[in-house]
Length: 92
Figure: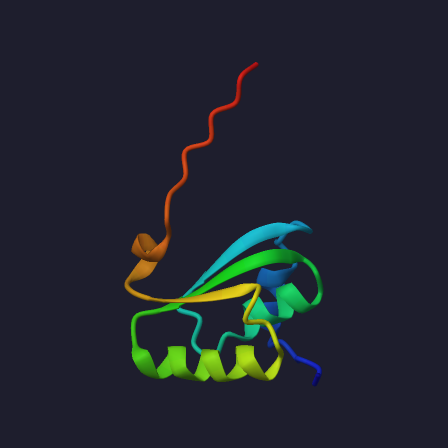
């Protein structure tokens, strides 16, 4: 596997992710951020979403290149509408 170099902007975003968190990269473009987070084990699972097919195709290629198909799910759609909401009930 090749190393991933993040831009300063993406590195700043990655620094906010708590270890083991599931993440969603809305407007993923090439999928670099979720690949980086999963490879560093900062994230267990990730959703990489984009509004257009072209960026998702580029993300798919990168995800396959880095063997992350089992940890990163691609979704086509607009904004947070691509997320599946879960309701978690905790009994205290």
